[in-house]
Amino acid sequence: EVQLVESGGGSVQPGGSLRLSCAASGFTLSRYWMTWVRQAPGKGLEWLANIKQDGSEKYYLDSLKGRFIISRDNAKNSLYLQMNSLRADDTAVYYCVREFAAASWGQGTLVTVSS
Amino acid sequence: NFMLTQPHSVSESPGKTVTISCTRSSGSIASTFVQWYKQRPGSSPTTVIYEDHQRPSGVPDRFSGSIDSSSNSASLTISGLKTEDEADYYCQSYDSYNWVFGGGTKLTVL
Image (tube, rainbow over all chains, first blue to last red):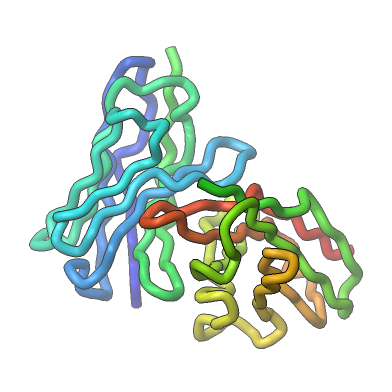
């Protein structure tokens, strides 16, 4: 069974940083593109970034302006999202998603940016 | 860049059929696959349709997807509505490697 478990969310002050992790199990991570999507409270889904199987290609939402960095460690079956210079409007549930035909989603981790 | 536009909400009675549209603002709807996700309150999204019309295992055949080039839109049709179908539904497609989501449609089964 495909499982994606996000962690690393929490409360942080504006300007701070967080590193989200996504632990993958039930499949071989190295075979799949992976994606991060977020959802602000009461809002819709927003794609953030994705990364190729070997990490050689990465694509980002333009408006992130280099604040977020996606990475992966296939040996550890893990996907990451480094988030810097956090702002109040980054408050959201962050999901990791396995891209392939029928996408598989994690349960999400909540990030709250507030002073 | 393009946008995907969905109706904000739709409602229908149990047992009936409902169709949710997803209109692409520019470029052909047929040029990249469309996916549909269902999200119930407090839960993460799940895929109900991928590659325009494919159903993942476990998704009942009451769910179907299609695209219409004349209206440049995709549609999700749910027949034999059940109360458990009440949820938010999002369409999604691709702009090169980037994902583009529609704004979501709240389906009420009343």
